[in-house]
Length: 260
Length: 319
Ligand SMILES: Cc1cc2nc3c(=O)[nH]c(=O)nc-3n(C[C@H](O)[C@H](O)[C@H](O)COP(=O)(O)OP(=O)(O)OC[C@H]3O[C@@H](n4cnc5c(N)ncnc54)[C@H](O)[C@@H]3O)c2cc1C
Image (cartoon, rainbow over all chains, first blue to last red; front, top):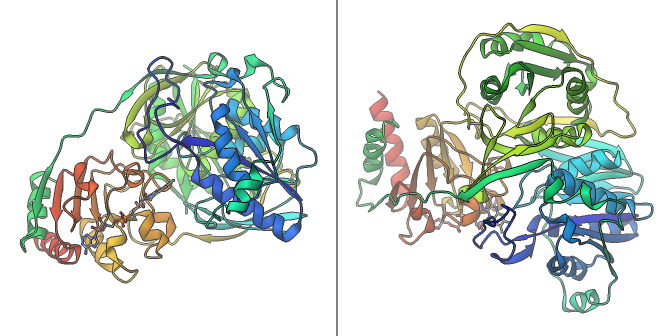
């Protein structure tokens, strides 16, 4: 079974995140960059499927050169090889353009059976890139999986959404996105980290995946950010220590605010 | 005036509140047209509420397949309406399904996609809150039609009567080879509490609650306030409360009038889902807990002493 995992490098949610003043794109230099936690779970799920069914796991990542670190992390967990789409022209691409680039990159690989992605990244939060990639590939989408089963021919998931839990099935090839409740990702072993250094990573340009530079990037994005600024800081409130009447005091505060 | 399509979010024969918010926002941009996708007989039950919130048209797309396939029936219906009606915008709730429908629609129709808008003006410029409220940005699309997902609870729904003219729309046949089939469904227990993202008051518990049984303390307080119950990721991962109630970066984003956090430290990823709440009250026994940095009213104390007293006092004032 040939499995592709889509991974993204994001600013660490523990660090301060901001947009650049010049063009309102993500200021990647201002924060520590990490492999988005949800992608570790996507890699884990791909490795579990490979262990059960045999096959290969290929990591596909779009991002600046520095995203190499996120790719190495996925390889050190056990993925076999990687495709890194890296091109100045991609700077400022929006969700639709990102999906186009990822779908095109998947298209350069032979006989892919299953694509696994995280349900939503922690920086963009459009929550739609996996669905858009499925649209572009013309494949069934099985998203928000909290459980995944595949026999190499078809795939079945438990999908957890606001409406409840649904069982969803499709034939391969298909695209699955996973939620953070699906598994606990393994830690890379020392051996894994050493082995990752020798695993093949092919770096592709926009032209290599068959797109032209005017289809991607800030200049041709179908959406434009017109302004951005840090939110005004919240005023500090009151802090009191419970001396036995804490519950009553809260109600007094709430009634002062007309909230009870 | 061009049409503005609103995808109707409905459950159990009722229009979800977010749809009324979207109809209100749609009126600023053009003529609101509600799009109902569902099994046969769905639109009839929803028409009155849609008309009362200004729908000038109601596109009725009914088919048994609407419930058997995931996402694609809605995308197919909206895509064909985008080409026939040439709307200025398509508004979709920023729910799990809504975001995916919007994404695929944008790709298929070549439209710009604006995600998780918290406001929308007459020019189609959307306001966004980024990185959990730490940043604000506004954006617009440069395409003929804009696809926008709007966060529930961000626009105040205002009634306005519309013509409510019903127009039949086709649900294109689904290609079983390319679509995912829904083979089973366990609906979320509706319960008596308001929906988390729609609630005016949210009471959340964290790891400090200590066990699933102890969450009864949180639920009792929530019920006295008519609130929804939320939980931190640590509480969910410890099995104290089900995952659909998680608030934060990777859970739900809530923006109620009042958010009460009990036994929650206030990690940045939790704050990302609740710091735009209008008023925040926190109870934590650690005076240094970061939740106090954003609380309007912080109580340093044991939640098992404070919460029951708070519940009793609220009940007392009600009677
Ligand atoms: C990528 C990523 C995404 C994440 N997404 C989310 C998310 O969506 N939502 C989320 O919540 N977290 C999320 N987290 C986790 C987050 O970092 C914290 O670990 C989590 O929010 C901690 O939950 P907590 O506050 O309940 O637990 P803790 O941090 O352990 O805090 C428990 C608090 O309870 C207090 N306490 C204990 N006993 C009592 C008592 N009897 N009375 C009063 N107070 C008491 C303690 O003083 C302490 O402050 C994410 C993390 C990452 C890396």
